[in-house]
Image (cartoon, rainbow, N blue to C red; front, top):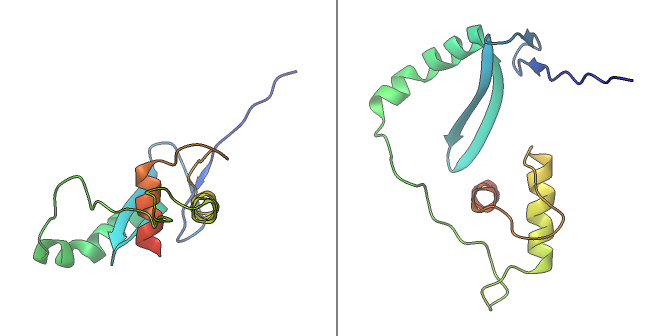
Length: 115
């Protein structure tokens, strides 16, 4: 028996199916929070047009991003409750995290930015 799994992107604005090469997942940040949205080529163009005057007037920030530390219990380690909260948030926001072990720094940073 064979099984075929199809991954289909759906435009988050208009609900249309995004064909191969006709759209993408767009990531952006605003006021310290990171976002991602799946858009068709048409809606990417609209998104870029809407942002254009703000991007042109803004100063681009470069570098490795902000360095943030997760709240700890005083010994440099996150509490079990904090780690559970990060994992729960990460899964709800499309990140893959294991039930145990280290959580990627970018996931912890995204969690911090969202809270």
